[in-house]
Length: 198
Image 1 (spheres, rainbow, N blue to C red):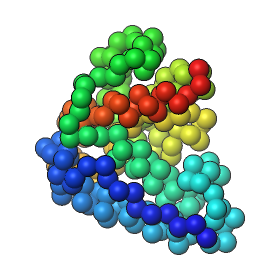
Image 2: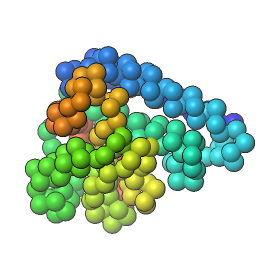
Image 3: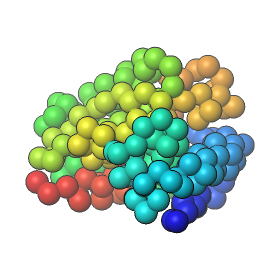
């Protein structure tokens, strides 16, 4: 049976400070995500999904398997999209054009994304995704849900579970969301968008 492993971070534990502290990363990646990985590996035997990809499991499963697989997929996309040394503060090329086309401007996109992240009730994620034609949408996904369950390609996500920000921002979710833009690696987001066949 295939075993999932804890993904390595593409930067040092203190690389995202002060936006995300070393302590938060140690707990968020080393404790929360590691627990989801261990839980999923313990649940797969006898499920019929032992050889499935993470994406397949998220689209085909329910209950505890879905909750843990969804959180792994969400966190892998989340952690991979940041950098302590961003080369630009907003996207370029095809993604930049799509944002202007679908939201009016980059600032308007950021405002809507921030609002949907701040107003999501309970725990979950706010996502920028694209449909098969490359049209961009912002969605709120509760708990461990992922846009791939709706046929979308996830591009950018902010985690609004409290464990993502409570050590650094306490209950100030909007403040946390506002600072995350400083560490987005737009090169990664552009590559995700570039894989969509328009």
